[in-house]
Every structure is written in C-alpha cells, then in structure tokens.
Length: 173
Image (tube, one colour):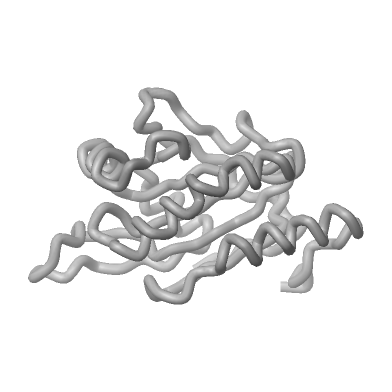
C-alpha cells in the first residue's frame, strides 16, 4: 500500500458532493490548508460524532485559512442519508471515493461484515492537512474506527504551525 509522505504531492481526485457539486482537490484549496477528513460511512456512529464536531468547528478552521471537506466511499443515497440523519448541512460532504483512489491516498480498506449495515468495501478513517500547493503537511491514517485525532488539538497544532512557520514532520518517510 503506497503511503503519502509529507512535503510530497497528494494525488488529485474528484468526488461528487451531497449539495450537487463536485470537490476536486486541485481546485478547492484553503488559504493555508485543506482538511480532508475521510470517514467510514453511514454505518459508523463514531464518524457521525466526528463529522458533527467538525461542522461545529468549521468557523474555527475557516479563521485559520483551513477549508474542510469530509469524504467517504458511500454511494449517493448513503451519503445523503448521513447528511440528513446526522444534521450535516454546512460541512461539505463528498461521496463515491473510488477504491483505487483510496488506495493511492494510503487509506486502509475493510470488508463489510455480513451481519452489519456496513457496505461490502469501505475505507477506514484518515485526516490530512494539504497545503495550497497540494503537498501533504499532516496525515493521520487509521486501521480502526476508534481513537480519532481530537479536532481541538488539531486547531492548536495549526495555530502553532502558522505562528512558527513549523515544517511538515515525517518527511523522511
């Protein structure tokens, strides 16, 4: 599985959005960072909490020049249901991420359990901060649904990074 390395380019990709638009990484960058939050999908209650938390903090991220988008491999129907059931009406919600793209991004893949509402295949959670030049600054890629990076700590880290021109770490691979 390829792993993205800080200071190297993040592959460009496009996904459909629940608002009817499209998100293309190379075309929608925040002033300082684009926050890509990859979530497991409608079946995941932890994702629900994380996306709601991110939506509550959108203004905090925007104040720091960070544009946020949440993306899953769910189909349109499941993504729309997530938006409606979870009250996600401000956070950009992308869907239909292809497995090949998920693998290029280094996301872990899981097979759905037959006795659950999980889809046949889906990606596990990840959170990236991507600079406007489309290079990776920060990555948290998980193989399990639990223990996500706290968004308040991420905001503090962004404040520190911006105030101190702090370089991306992990750049040696």
